[in-house]
Structure formats: structure tokens, C-alpha cells
Image 1 (cartoon, rainbow, N blue to C red):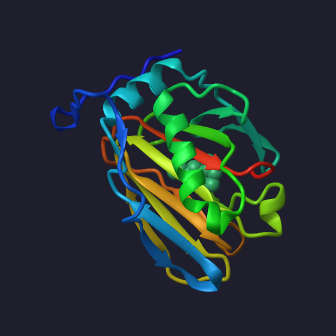
Image 2: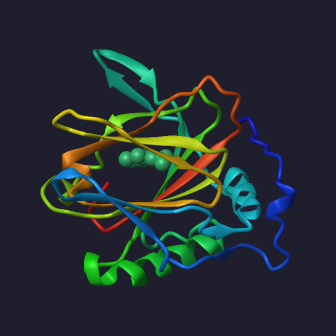
Length: 210
Ligand SMILES: O=C(O)CCC(=O)C(=O)O
Ligand SMILES: [Fe+2]
């Protein structure tokens, strides 16, 4: 398998290792139909260390899917950690606990699983979809995404049609999609022709949702 290197940023060198910022300042963007997105730019400080570990230690694999009767490569690499699987970096366990504690009053259950995507270049992407497997098909849930590496655009659009909303998701940023977001809106990471380096996203979800 190819190895994915990145250029550590001088600004990001934290002597004490990576650390989480506060969730108190999360900015909530209300969307139509009871959907919302919380955005915390730079939630993780010292993200270079986490990105390096994720690129090297996660058992990334390619998948193929059938589309219109053809088998095609999924345009990103994937990995999945169940609630009992040790996460590849201690900062991620800290992040999951902090998110569970912060959102407990609204969510009523903890974040459990960690799905991971590796976008190797700007050619990698995820097409429009909602995370509607399992209970998310019928009830509100939250999907918390922490991004590492090159900034990419996360787009959201209402399923019924309407303007899309764009969030830049950069190194150490947190985005939480909540309320009805998975059922009433769709999201995507579009391809880009800009020369971008690798991006890893970690998606925390509640049990029984994917
Ligand atoms: O990489 C991201 O930020 C989004 C990934 C995603 O939507 C998914 O895996 O369901
Ligand atoms: Fe998704």
C-alpha cells in the first residue's frame, strides 16, 4: 500500500502533544426541517501528531460498490472501529468522551463507533448521501466529524431541493450534524482540482447508526 505523507505545519507544534479545546464556543447553524450543524474550527490543537498516527496506523482498505450494474472503486479509503475496538490515537478516545459528555443532555446516549475515511487526494470524495442506516432512518441522531489534514469542503443540501450550505473542514476542526440532518438533508465532500494533500475524517456515531 502507498504511504501518505504530509508536511507538518510549524504553527501546529505543541510541546505537550495534541489537546482538545472547549466545546462551549460551538457555533450552531440552524438548517431547515429541524436540522442543524455545530462547527468548532481548530477544536483539536497539535493535530499533526494525530494525522501522522492515523495515516500510518489505521488499517485502511479500499472498497468496491455496485453502481448502475457496474463494480466501481469507492473513491476514498475506509476503516471502522466498533465501540470495543481500541482507537488508534488516545486523543480520539478523549474526543469521543468529551463529545458524549457535552451532547448528553440533547442526545441522551453516548457516541460509540468511529468510522474513518482517508481522502488521498482531491480526486477522493464522498457523494451526496445521509447517514441513514439503522435507527438514523427514522429518528434524530448526531454524527460528530473531526477532520485532520488538508482542508476540504463539506456541503449540505436539503433533500427537498434548495440552496446548499458549505463548511470548510480543516485540520483539527469539529463538525456535528444533528437533529433531523441525516434524514432531511444530505451531505457530500466533493472532488477538487486543487492540489490538496491527504485528509482523514473521523466520524463518531451512536450505537446502531451508520
Ligand atoms: O469525511 C467526511 O467529513 C464525511 C464522511 C461521511 O459523510 C460519511 O462517512 O458518512
Ligand atoms: Fe455521511
